[in-house]
Length: 302
Image 1 (cartoon, rainbow, N blue to C red):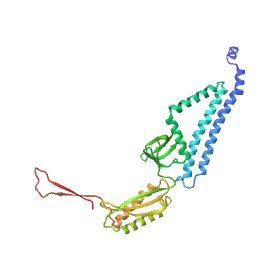
Image 2: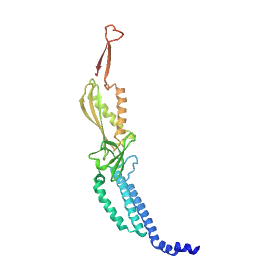
Image 3: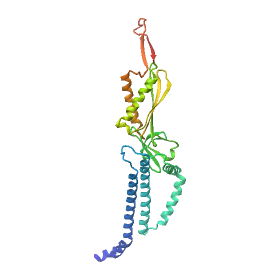
Image 4: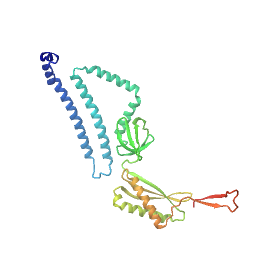
């Protein structure tokens, strides 16, 4: 029985194969794993080198490093494991020539039949090369708005405030509006009644802005003092005054919400009127007809 088994499986040949091709296959797989791990380690260290001491925000260099790091890791994995698979197939005695030729033909077919995919990859390369936006930026593109969670050569992934995820092929992005490049801005129009002294109101707004900028919780978010731009418009029921804050990226909405809260409380305390539409209902003097009272409605926007 042992003799028959040795005829079926030549142990000596198997040992020789493991000592040559088998060992090379193991070395190829281990080398591929080490190369991928090394690429991950290097890119992580580079990302850490660009980090500052403020974990609450990401500056432009941090965003760019994180974006390029993810792309480089993905490309490295694909290239290294593709080469490793080809080397393993060759060690197994499989002719990889026809495989490479088939891949080339398939690449041509994909190039002609999937032009949109090629367009997406080329657009993705320009997004990275030109640094149009990075992971963590809040952008508007292809009709979608949200914070960039992921960028690949094929698509950009956004998540909006409601938690919805938008996956946008890079080739469909014609215009990108980046709301958080280097710095952000919060602009607010505030309406006050016509009876108010606009100079006094602008002074109050400046005081509120200075107090907010001096607050420890918000001082790091604000990069420039509040600018009171002046009277923006004479609306139907209000004089509109425009103010503006310059903030750290993505912090304009946080600063804006707090500023609105302080404006409302301060205006209430100082008796400054924020007008809003009023509706007055007048009941007619005539007697009701068939149980119906004639009602005259007038709008008072003063």
